[in-house]
Length: 596
Image (cartoon, rainbow, N blue to C red):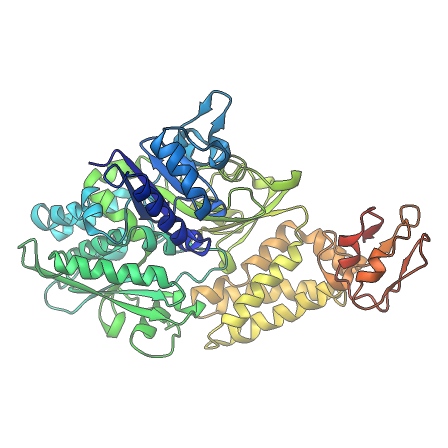
């Protein structure tokens, strides 16, 4: 038995920060200190505080070290692991008080979270099936195969109120029920959508990296429920760590008899294979994803028929995203009432968000449905840096909308977000402060959609490009108020006529910013000004003569020679030469240059 476990995050963020070198250094120092039989270093999945990586937690002391470097290993081992004296300078600052170090569950970041889908992430080694089994892994699969009928499984998921975590929030149990007919007589499939193409989203990737077996177990349960014997996980090739850990997990599950023939001697057969996507955003749409698995160009299909009737290879198919699958085993083991006790009346359970943008605690969080945006931003997220004010939050990525400060206290759930012009989406949550231009934000997301459109339907292929052209005119100060009307009508038309859900929701970032920040659009059009000072074409840099000391630093650093003036005399900027790069303002030590 080890007396101490050191859990080092091995997710993508911490891996990019050098966690492998930290682990190697820790093991070397532990060996040198003669602690190999007392201390165990475990490479886990994401702990959540991605901005502070590499991150490690020492148990049972419940101390989190942030931004650990290989050269810190000697001090951690000698002081903390050998002598019991934590290294204060490396401890997560929110857990340090005048009385000492408080429990991580008492810190603002973790206190309001409830980890269901993420319960094993950051706790187990995802590459060892025994650690998953030690946390009740595969018990839910054993229970359904030995104690429950397929219809009872479906009813349990229905009673839990679980809705799909991939975007639209369709009831998961209802989807399974639609595909459950003719068990044993028709070939059926179970699919996992791990494509996750939204900018700023990394929830599904983190679950696959930190707890891959939970997805395999859940898919097997679904296969039993609807009468399918084959599953496919569609994951983008840009997730190499997730893909590698999935391959390891599938191999281990097969070796243990938890995938394959006659699972638990029940007569039930089920296996899973991986299919890699090439990074096409449209392949996150369920019918396009299935078309891609079939080896064809990933394009959406008209619906109906829906996949539950005619899906992969023309056979009945159910598809859920990674986070949805991650909830299934706990619902089976702890009961639908337990899951339904969390959240709101129509949005049960928890939701995982990738928290990013202008926020202190960038990372992965899981909150009960109904938690307010204010709690997420100010409490869990640690607030907005540099004393800036909250302006908006974007949820749902290119398919979602911007939530303004006036809705800061709206409880987050499916229906409330739709009512205020946004949507849950897969779970990206990007925070913006007063320095963000909402017209530029809308343009950013529309550029993404235009680039990722599969081109199959005219409203999306042509309509979004026309919308983008109007936005470009607005940010360049060349638009008229008629363009604003045209932008809005185009958005409404695309929502009603695009073929798939991605095309239908593409105008949302534009329409939501028009709804809440129309004054910014008008300022760009009428005043030819960007209130946030972001849109380059509408900016100008000017020297305040009373503050300029004539040090010539700005002139020497200007790449185009736009700044001129004599030593110890006020300088000036030639606007015809200025490319609005902002270098002059950044190098001025006297705050003499302003952006207007």
